[in-house]
Amino acid sequence: MAQSQLFDLVILGASGFTGKRVLKQALKFLNAPSSPLRSIALAGRSPSNLSQALQWASRPNSPPTDIPLLTADTSDPDSLRALCSRTRLIINCVGPFRRHGEPVVAACAASGCDYLDVTGEMEFMERVEARYHERAVESGSLVVCACGFDSVPAELGVLFNSVQWVGESSPYRVVGYLTAESERRIVGNFGTFESAVLAVDSVKDLKDLRRSRPARPRPAIPGPPPKGALIEHEKKIGLWGVELPSADATLVGRTFSTLTENPYGLPGRNESAEMVEKRKAFWSSVKPAHFGVKIASKHLLSIFVYITMGIFIGLLGKISFGRSLLLKFPSLFTFGVFSKNGPTDEEIESASFKMWFVGHGYSKKSVAAEGNRKPDMEIITRVMGPEMGYVTTPIILIQCALVLLSQRDNLPKGGVYTPGIVFGATDLRDRLQQSGMSFDVISKNKLCS
Image 1 (cartoon, one colour):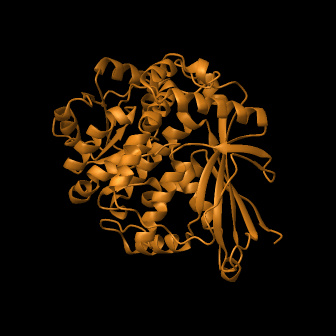
Image 2: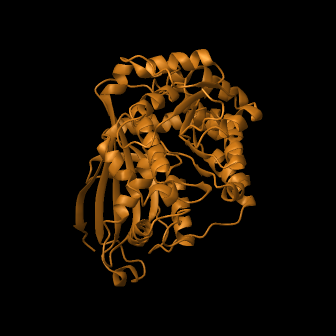
Image 3: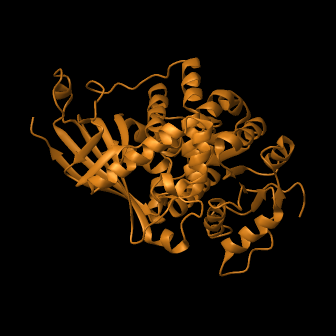
């Protein structure tokens, strides 16, 4: 195969637990009718492991013979630059991203190659935005992090709830209640747990980074900032919830900040007139709201388990010895929620998620303007899908890649952005619905004042 071939897509870290599932999803669209995906390459430290991943992802068929296995290492900048020179898009599945992600973003931003990943690590995302946004704008590299379960269901879910507030009505607060459901007990991947532990260690770095940067503009939202209780019971959906320290709320806030600066969204690098109108119409219908995410359960006891697990991670994650204990015995400190072995295929197939978006707001501008008037309107929407980490995440990531490859001129020329602001006005939600996820309006109600 010619060294100069330009691939549509390179999957970096394709032999990892998540990477090989991303590869399996990508193979469904390789050379498929109407698919923009015509060439794939795999990259990682070990060609042998990449070969095994390709065999696994191709089952029950024989692996394609025209997929190159390229050697690349996140600690070797030359190998990353060479990778970028040979592809339109890199999908990065090498985590934890705090340790391994920045060199890949740097190489993409320098070369003009586009970049997607599945991180949920807030410090990493804000660091690469601060360091590489301007360079990516200049080179034309579109860098979009968190294109998996973190944080596309939350971003598109909030936007879906937002556009239900039509006419003079406007949302004030939207709370996402996340539940994981399974016929079997399912354990989380160790990589996800490791990222959560390292996030505790990066809290100071994140605070310092935010203090060093200019404040982002905030959208005008009616009413004072909401004050939620530690544990909330949402009777309408029958769930208890406690705050989930994920990236979702921050990314939604960044999307709304970008929208405040660009009320009609971000223009594409060479977008069609049809897309200009579609983009302006969509973002004109979006009404920002305060947003938070809670991990939820029908059973209050489960909430206390989540709180205890969070205390362990929060306290032990602050010190080196504590982090080593957490990473050595994940099952012990999470009551079996996470394990080094990860879930089995049977556990993955039996699992699903639901994310309820409970929005409270005002039916008219005049009501919102009445001082501390309580919201008089409620809209509940829901996003559902298969197992979040190993089924939904690859589906989302590959659909984001297909949108990027097929509609590149309708997307921003370059820069480091959130999934919501990049993909919100595209057909990504329709694609996800065709791939096993659903976006539903559950109820619209007037509330007693």
